[in-house]
Length: 274
Image 1 (cartoon, helix red, strand yellow):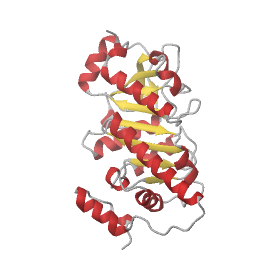
Image 2: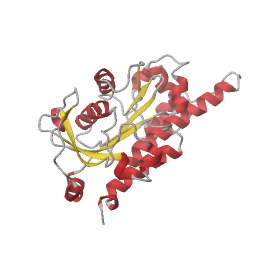
Image 3: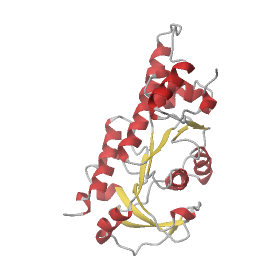
Image 4: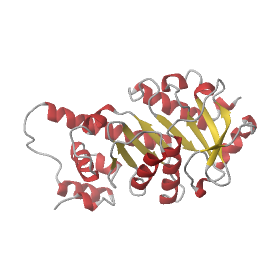
């Protein structure tokens, strides 16, 4: 048995491949990170080496000090993760200040964690605080329907949330808190990391204009399912618009409230109008 047989590594690899098969990861697009549980670190630790240099991230989160993350590699293709995980993903350790990382496993043919690692790292910090440590996954993908809608809808949290809630009945069940939207910014920089983490103080999802989605969750299945639900709802909305016909009926605010009552949800009322 090797590290590739450890369940958390297998689950990480499967999620990467699921995203590839949904056509969300052209070339080297998108990235995935996971904050490991202590028992998972212990299971993998015998495969670690601790001789790499520390790399400063340009951001700092004290509550992430000493944590270990699994990450896709910068410039690596999601298509290749399932073929050679050891060359396309890595595990990194965070230093005791929460401002630097070092690779302890993976990327055997060279490389560094995803260029979006600072954004992921800050979002992990925020979501861990907001969920008492429950959330462990940050997933970024180039979801085409959501990207398309950032060209034609106002880049506002309320507009995108209402569009999604009204596009498919299960949406308000899956993300009753709504979604946030980030204006276009240069990816891979500390500025977009901070802007996204501000939104993730309130939401599980941040939509990046003309770029894709950031989703967070407690595990791989729920995080992938969240992104899948949103992308499908966006695709439905685009299909409705493409008919060129007027919308005769939709899911109303009262319908959304009824769903909330029926499922015992705490729906974000700031996105409802009457």
